[in-house]
Length: 332
Length: 272
Image 1 (cartoon, each protein chain N blue to C red):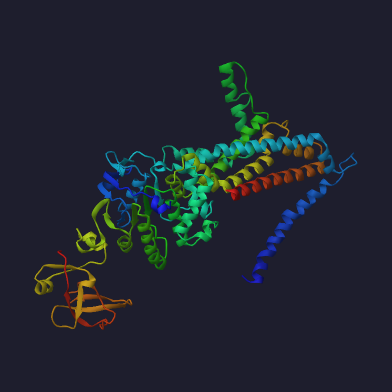
Image 2: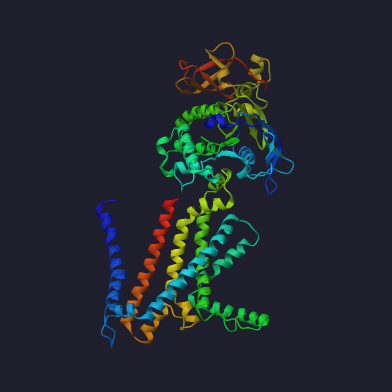
């Protein structure tokens, strides 16, 4: 039986979970959250919003305040020690054991469980194949690249056949290009494993690519939970809208005159630039050619700044006057 | 850096090394090869063939080893506690008390041991009050052992605390989520991470104990350890060749013990 078929997916249910530090400050307001069996949930938010604390509560490294419960499927694990919860965790920075080589790192959880060496070897080999590191079994950790370390950490977490998989900023330590590739790989691997997974990230693109659903957090609160498209199209608050991509706001006389509303809130890609004429008058302050598109920084005549995206052939240069229309606007 | 620049740095370094290490050592080693007055063999031969010198060496190595192991055994849990609890009430006072004896010369440490376990000491007074039997440790091996602990603990705790603080707590948390009990985390993750610090601290303890003189001298010149034997040969009997030969033996014995300890430590690090 391969690992992918032996993993069973369990839901994670948090009920009224809060976290107060000994000094009385609140890291997490009371929160209810269900991660469905087999889904990948991304916890997205700025640093200090409580997302890592929430992850640490799920794996048991932090206790919830009295009254909170955590269940894996129907099993109440609120008082279960981290070593007995059966969670696979990939830590930020990976936390690979420097005194063990790649294979020993991956096999450590199995060794602790008393798995015999033949079975252990077979499982480690299977893990190495899964993350495509067969050739590096005997390597020391300090001989690995960042991307290889990330995969060893993932293999180590999965090797114990965890009930749930928790990833804390799994790609943050990597450079942008590699991160892009590993997002695709990680997404495919999680789909293949079908395991219930929670990913903490501060990167909205990562959250939207990896998460079946995304939970946006701010200041210890859950702001909104939903699939990426829903969050982007129907953000419940300005915070959510702003965190998932750039959001522009315009208000004042010209806005009222052209659109009949006091203020406008829109995404840069919803702006259409035209030669001066109909629509709100604006002028180009800066132009950034980005290959697939051009990003313009503009100002209205009264000085309010905003951003617009246009196709790669957009002709305007800094100093040009344009007029703008909007394809779609959000309620302010 | 160019060749000339290297030479500018290397020449004074080599000169210093020759003047303050190589020449005195060569002289010392040469002195040991001389024949003491009234004898017809070299001092090295005497030192290596007379049982009383062997006894003195065995006492010194045994005591130093015991003091080193006891120091490490006490310092490790204390350092772990102090490193892991950065803010408990009284921590600063405790740290100051621990560091306080650092500057004491061996003489003062010896004096402290006498105050604690000597004939008029706290321990003896207590023992007599409780059981009627006297209990005096200060003037023998036991007193010296206690003195060495005074001497070695603050230094060792300092070194080990820094090493424990250097352990990434995520390693321990990762091991924990993988199912490791506190004991397994200690054995599999912490100890390997501390091996080099433990070896370095142990080597420092052992070498310090092998050569300690002030404490022994204060506690009594009847204690048979090499530094005292050397002192006796040098000052009381003016037997400079034997003093020199014993010094070389002391140096070699210490070096050999540290070499073995280092080899064992690096082997155990590789095996893991």
